[in-house]
Image 1 (cartoon, rainbow, N blue to C red):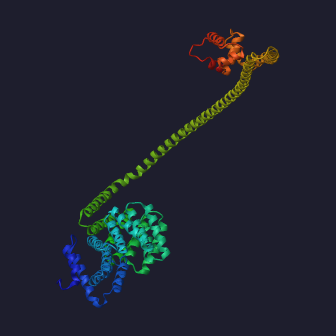
Image 2 (tube, helix red, strand yellow):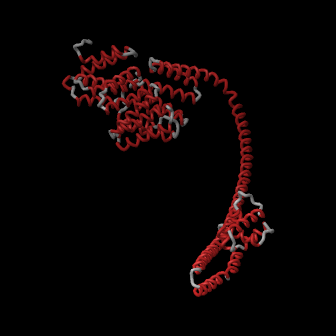
Image 3 (cartoon, one colour):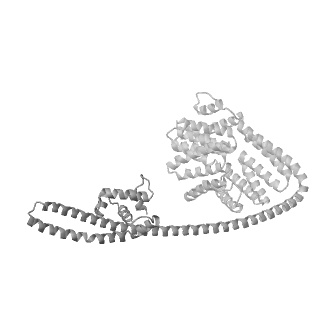
Amino acid sequence: MFSKRNSKYKYMLFFVKNRPTGSFRKWMGMILCWMICLSVFPHDKNNSCQIQELLDKAEEMLNADPSKAIYYSSLAITEAQKIGNIGCKTMGQAILGEAYMNQGDFNIGFEILTHAMEACPSDSLHLKACIFLHLSGAYLKLKDLHKAFMYVDKAADIYRAQNDSLHLARCYNARGLVYIQKPDNVRAEENFKAALSINRKMNNLSSLAANLNNLCLYEGNSAEKVALLNEAITINRSLGKIWSLGENYNNLGTQYFYAHDYDHALSALDTAMSYATKINAKELIADNYRYRSWVYEAQRDYKKAYTYLLLLYEAEKDLLMMNEMRQIELNIVQKHLRDKEQQMIMQEQAYQINFLRLWISIAVLAVIVLMLALSYAVYHYRQKKKLVLLEAARQLENHEKELMALKLKQSESEAQAVQQELEHRRKELTNLAFFIRSRNDLLAQIQEKIKAGYKLSPTENERHLRSIYTYISQFSARDTETGVVIDEINRQFIERLSQLHPNLSGNEKRLSSLLRVGLSTKEIASIIHSTPKTVNMARYRLRKHLNLETDDSLTEYMKQI
């Protein structure tokens, strides 16, 4: 039957010879299924259109009847291999792998998806994205959330680049399922709602029903979620999706459980079981057992709860893969079963003292609440008082700062006024000094003219001398006026100098005034009609009276007074 002459069975031979794990009976079932497919469809219909129709039917049956999805996808793989269509063959493998996953055969499903990934042409981005999406679902079932996120993000990047909103909605839905397992219900709901918005806009009923179902995978707003599940059930019933209906009713039962409506919960779970057993959906059946154990435990019917936990254990043993990850999950289920059995024994013993513990807890809680309230009141009072004191201190500090600022501003204004007055006096005195210096220069010129008169005749010289004498007399008459002006300009300076050094003579005070202006020794000598040597002697005596050192500047000292 498996002769090399018959190329129809090469694909089946590869899986039989190379499968690493799994039941031989399951693989034989696959081979028989493919053989039936080969006998039913004639060879003259192996064109691409027919293969695509088979793939569409297989994808449509994924959530309706996984066994039919296996049938159609197996047939599509065989026909695609016969005409050498690698793309269709790879797509068929992706659908076939997910169909086995939905049926609970994780070993076979994951292996087929891996082969599909390896066989996918590198330039078929859309096909690669589709396989990434299927692999994300597979890793989600294997509890490998990191790889589940990685593959769904890869698929989303491709669909986003191709502006494929329909498949992008599937990516959002897949991400939501991964976040449910994380668990992060808030981000899961964001992704589900994003997918729901796209599917409603595009009127994609199948994906819309899946979104509605996935929005009800966790607790909260049970009434709203019951309405969403009823909408999903209506859509899936119209589409004939049996697997999806089983999942919808399972979730409906859990929402009734969260709402403490246990009768409706059991009724919904009964309906879910009828759909699951129709298509032998092992995963749905296991979930149904789990939810029933919850309901019976809540109803305090521990015997039935324990019975369904045993059924769950047996069902999950069939579903768990033959590797370390699945062995760990099996151990967890066994431990959970033992814990539940022990819990059932202890609950009967603990029930008698629960009432007393409740009242003791209430009393202790009341005392704690009272103490906390009292502590909070004291703390609040102290904090309020502290804030009042801090505010008062802050206001006082602000007032002090404002007062210091005003004083500083006033001092600056006074200093500025004094500086302006001093500058004005200095300018006046400087102008006067310049005037005196000009007069002295003029007198020097007259002196030169007198020398020039020596060369004139006696008659001319007498007349020349008279004119010069008259000119000199006019300027000499102003010496007294000049002294008065100098004394008036420096009156305040002289007063301060006299207070500091009351033993100074009038000539020393006048010399101090001229030094304060910054005149040189020669200029001072010209003003007081003396020689520079006499002025230097006067400076020496003044320095001695003022008790100044040799290195101290006499002029700078006068300017500081």
